[in-house]
Image: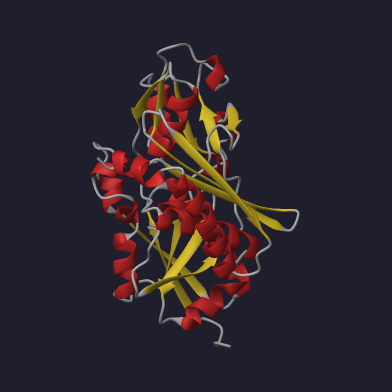
Length: 313
């Protein structure tokens, strides 16, 4: 067992939600290691800077973590805290994700000043979302609505709604809850309506794979059930080439001792949505990932590769 840490530096994005997440990890570490100096190193990422184009056009989710990973490589930080849905499905070799923490509510939230639900929106109402996954599911179930791109951090997205640029927006419920914005949530979208993204609602802690001392310090923060669920979800996305450029969803929960995985791929216009499920009793990340690949095989048998190829142009 490694000696108790004397100092831990956390690399984090500067958005209010990212800082909340980093501060949450800082406070947990301070409670575990009272003699340790735990500090934040806030920084702006490329994903935060490019706001005039959809994320799918400018390089995808990796834009939100690159600068943080450079800080790890250069020794300016020991760990980086991420929303798991922002972490690329394939981490590069120098890095590891030794810990995924207990998950907040993983579902999407309906946010609007005028309307109480998607069903209340009139034909032609403008719904904002940053996600092709959400867009495909909205088009499939509410073809009479208009769906527009929505970028920016959480506060920016809410401001755009308040300014009247959108009739409603869809956001991850976890971020709203973490920032105490419960009153902005008009409704929760069931997984049957908007199947979540892989890793949604979960926070991961990244470090250099060589830093086994850091990995050990972090272990008390890990949630084994969330690790199994998110590992299965990420295995689906990884196998299907998942990124923000394709309408792909994967969501797993532990239910009655089994891991239950649901996965979805679709055309962005909602004209075709493919779904698959898998259930198994799993005891390790490897077993969770193997179960996920059975769901992937089901999707491929339905024609998922052709649907995804069309989505990528």
